Length: 196
Image (cartoon, rainbow, N blue to C red; front, top):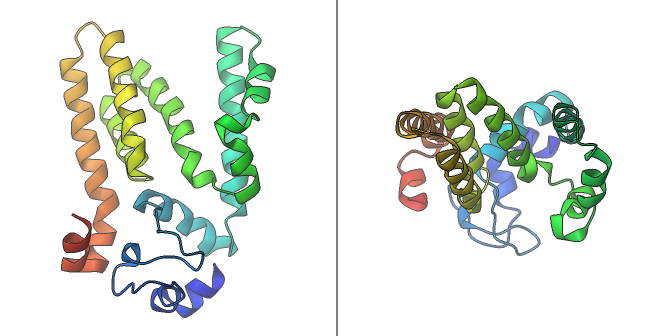
């Protein structure tokens, strides 16, 4: 990662096998795989890489946050499920083994954000929930299904969900604009033409 910072985006883009041009999402990596990291993941990693030169601090924060979330839920519900949940998350179906092997925590941060969003709904901070949901979708577009599930859960748990859902929608719109703005400023018309 320090090489990317020192040599710049053009140097890094030239390392792929596909013709990247001005949009890194148009090409492929050296492993001949499509680039699938969303803008939220990139914005999440930048401060850690800039400060430390690697992403290990982000990894550490993810695991502390994950364990704290499980512990908090266990203590709050008083149902002694912490050890069971920790063991269940080690099964291959949950893909946390993949996280341990490849350090892909930025793709699993949405799990922590759903926990925070759930907590925020109890506080009626609906606009902030929308901001978090925008961040989740822009980590990977496939997380839109998990966000839809969260919104369905909320709809069926709330007596009159229309006004809170509108506030969440405003938060999603504001969050998406705030996350995409740096990419739009750097990429200009090419960003919009090649991604939308």
